[in-house]
Figure 1 (cartoon, rainbow, N blue to C red):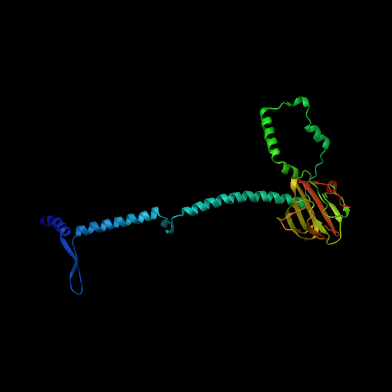
Figure 2: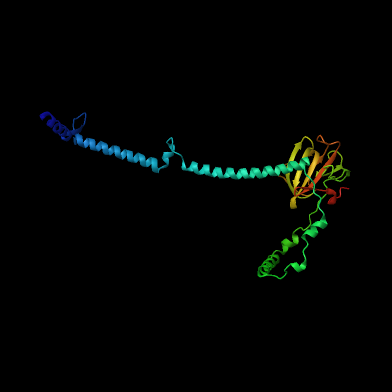
Amino acid sequence: MKDKKKEPKKIKRKLLDKYRLVILNENTFEERLSFKLTRLNVFVLVSLSALILVGITYAIIALTPLREYIPGYSSTALKRQATELSYKTDSLQQVINVNDLYYNSIKQVLKGNVSATDINKDSIIEAVKLEASQVDLRPIAEDSLLRDKIDKEDKYNLFESATSSTNFILFPPVNGTISETYNVKDRHYAVDIIVAEDTPIKATADGIVIFSEWTASTGYVIILEHSYGLISVYKHNAALTKEQGDLVKAGEVIATAGNTGELSTGPHLHFELWNDGYPINPTNFIDFK
């Protein structure tokens, strides 16, 4: 029993026993510093130092960008960039889908896989014709305000009104004899004009080149997009002078006539006109003689 009582006292005495830590000059043995320590003080000091070190480490990891260099932690900037790239990818995918539909339409134009629709002008007029007695022609307040606004805009835009073009004129890409006319029944949605080899082919109107490539069946082909939903197609060329994306003016040389492609039987220009996806007869608008 006495030994058991002595053990706690002995441990307590060891913890509270005082020690002196002395720092001496090695050459002169002069005392520089001295500290009075106990084992309990050393234990408390080491514990506090460990806690402070852990706290500082946690603060650096949690509150500073240095945590991004530790494996397993993600970067806020990388997350933001990933989100932005995800939105951009979605937008680009939509643009690609629209372009795919557009290029598929161009392929249909090149292959001629389009069914023509006969439209009767008289039936259209009858369909939209209204009896005057059925229409209320009395102006309302909104109409009057709109008219005043338009009058003011027109008043200060006389120069633009005077210089704006109201007529859309198509020029012949080449002059020559038509060897094959526009024929819907035979799915020949174009006119073939006989011309000499390397004759300059000109743009029928102002526009932008949307296709300028080689095709096996029709040789060198160039397609222009114009105003009012109009598209012109030039096939069987010997060479092309414009590339996709180029802007061209009416009468500007865009190709030279030739005899390229599997479907060509001699030097000529295969010329097509399309309006909003429907083929139209070029001779109704252009004189090739």
